[in-house]
Image (cartoon, rainbow, N blue to C red; front, side, top):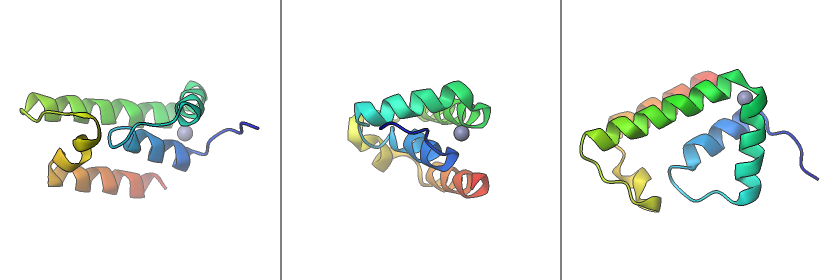
Length: 86
Ligand SMILES: [Zn+2]
């Protein structure tokens, strides 16, 4: 049975999708959650922006390596944002 993700689970998936490939079930659950949740939609948008910004600064993203290449400052900010949202 598919159940609705909590905001905490959704935000974890949102940050993880830059670090690993999500399963279809995870992607489906996340998509469903984003349809009904403004807060997580905003968070997803911020994460996309952050990734695009990092790319503009010349970092190359290649699948699973992306997390390792995120600047330390950005990783810390993401962590703090997640903590605040819990
Ligand atoms: Zn949510």
